[in-house]
Length: 129
Length: 340
Image (cartoon, rainbow over all chains, first blue to last red; front, side, top):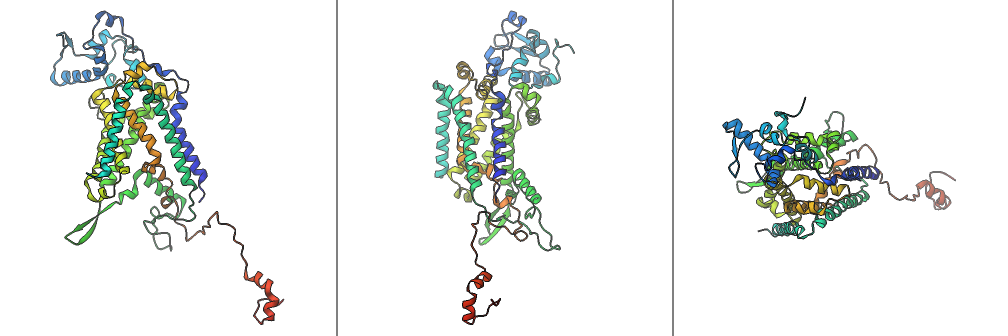
């Protein structure tokens, strides 16, 4: 059999697919990373419910726990380590200080191509439809 | 314990220690940027080299394995998929082989029963495990494209990545959403490994080259799950590194230092797999396309296949022989076809 042409064609397609991220990424400066903006309201408050590094890692877990706690147990109060109490609410508590979803939440989520399904149910109070 | 298994385990442990501890000793640049380039280059060149070596191998005649009735008289029903005589049949056969592992589906196991009777039983679990493993691995691979393309491109053109991720997280368990493929991948690879460890017959024929890739992929899957569900690494920093690699515009060393050792371990295992791939049994990924026992039509009784690189043979037909020696033959009284 002489299938060299077919084999080489297949190899070229394979190599092109493997290298496609390099072709598409060439010359881009997307390695800079996102720059989420802390809003003025949040800056005035000074402190979130956890430390910044903890929030970066844990915010989705906390939101999940809050949802389960509110929906299943009707338990709506979150107490921080230093005794402060917060209403468990994404739209009212989180977005109250972080009133800039576009510059805060979306910056990192978009950069990492994460599509959280918070907004399937919740709305951003600041967002005019 | 089996020496082959022990050797593979030791190799994984050594590689794991290197991948976890060494990058944090100030070698982030090497393990996070240079090694991935070396790995991708080795992988691609190695695959091309292996495939071209196969392409050069002579396949002068049709050697398909026939698993059914071949084309014969019109009243004998041909098995058109398992014994194809046309290109269409071959394409269908290859499709089933590549996408559904048809030949593995027929896997049997031999057992001695009632003391002296040998029995062959259909054994489907190897096929189930293989199917789960390969498809979950493919899903995981496609999902990882989100680290190698910018978001706008992913949303506009490569939307299948998002669709696959949504389907993968169909059950919407927890946050970050549990993506089933990762767990299926780890479970399937551990099942395939347990088969080689627990089944004495399979263990007997297993080599280090069988255990090592399974353990390596288990390591990749485990570190991946660990990063997503337990350690919760900084995804934006990791995407800065990966996008930096593909754009040849590397991210700052501070970002590279901020990422945890588990990421470097994961990356190091993947680089090992990429470098190991072309020189191992994992090349069955390309080999499945090039198996002459599968990709040739069984038409040996319809078409005369002449070896294309046969040298031209100088023949001396009887006619020309007689022309050369006619007079001498007549002289000796031998019968000839044509008198002078």
